[in-house]
View 1 (cartoon, rainbow, N blue to C red):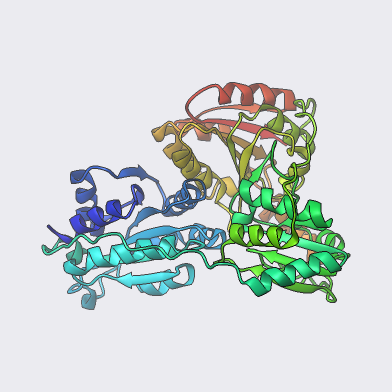
View 2 (cartoon, one colour; view 1 turned 180 degrees about the horizontal axis):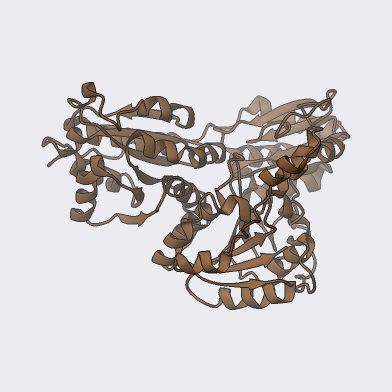
Length: 512
C-alpha cells in the first residue's frame, strides 16, 4: 500500500466521502487511488477557486467536511479567495495539496513554492507529510481539525514521493472534541442583563441561526422583550415559515449606526460585535454605540444551542410560538426591482430550497420580502471575497440532494468563477441561477461615493462591464447550462417556475 492509498482509506474511515478536485501531475497517485478505492464521490472543478468554494457550500449544508484536491502551491493560491470566505464561514474543509517530491525540492523546479506559507493565513491546521508512513496519521488529524467546533480549514501538503512510495498505513478516525460548554457565569450575567436592563440586543451567529437556535432565542425574546439581529454575513440562516423574522445588521455604515444606536447592551451568541465592512472618512469603525456594553454568552467555538437553552432555563422562559409572518407573497410584475424580485423568489421557491446569495448591492433588502416564503436555508458571502456565489450553490447542490438551490448572483462577481456552471451541468445539479445583469460593478460605484472620491470617466470605465456586453445566455450555453433572458419580473417568474420543475441547472439572465 502506498501513501495515496492510505490517504483515501483514512479519509473514508473518517467520514470524508466527497472530493472536490482540480488535480495536476504531483497528485496523480492520489487520483489513481481515488479510482481504485470505491466510496469517494469526486467532483471536478475547472478552476481551484471553484473547487474551494464548492467545499465551503458543501460543508454549510452537509455539516461535515469534504476534501479538496489542489495542484501544488499555485493551485492552492488560486483557491485562496474562497478559502478566505470559508474561514469566515467557519466551514470545515480538508485541503489535499500536492507538492514536489522531497528529494526534488532542493532543485527549485518551476512549481516549487512556499505552500505552507500560503496555506497558513486561511488554515486552522497545516502539515506536510514527508513520508508515506506518515500520510494516514496526518490525514486523520486533518479531519479531526476540520471537524473541531466551529469548523476549520485543515491543509495537508503531500509531496509526490510520500504519495507514491510504499509503506502507507491507514489510520482510524480520531475523536472530535465537543463544542465548549456554556459558562454558567456568562449565562447568569446574560440573564441578569435581560431581566434588569432595557434596550438589549441579542446578536446571533453560527448555530444560533439554525431552526433549533431560533426556537430557543424566541423563548428568550418573548419572555424578556429584548430585540434580536443576525450578524451581517452568515454561513447559513434558517428562514421562512416557522422561523423567526430575523433581519441582519445592515451593511451600509450610516444605516447600521442608526439601527444600533439605541442599544445599551449587546449579548453575543457565537457572533462578533458589529464593525464596519470597511473604514470610511470621519465614520467610526464600531457601528454600535460607544456607550453600549458588550456581553459574551458564547464564542465561536462554544455550543450556542446549549448556551441558549441554559439561558432560557435560567430565565424560566416558557415555550413560545414563532410569530406568523403572514401569507406567502405573490410573484411581482413589471420592471425588475429588488423588492419585486425578492417577492417573486419567495412566491415560487419550493419547500426546503437553498438560497446562495451573492446579489451584493441589489440584494440588501431581500430579507424583508422573504420572511413568509416556505422554509428554506440562506447562505451568505461571508468574507467579502467575490466569486463565492456560484461555487457555493454548486457545493450546496452536491450536499443537498434533490433540494433546489437558487443562486442570486451579481454579474460582475459571477465572472470570477463562471466555470461553476460547467460542474453544475456535468453533475446535473438542481441549481437555478438568477443572474442580475446590470453590466457594472454597482457596489463599487456606491463605495466610490462612500469614501468621498469623485468619479470621472477613467474611474467609471473601470467599473463598467459593458463594451462589450456579457451575453449570459451564450456563456451559460457554452458551459452546458440551458439559459434564457428576462427583462420583466413576470418573465423571470415564468422561467423560475419552469426551472424548479426540472432536475438540472438553469440560468435566468435578469436585465436590471
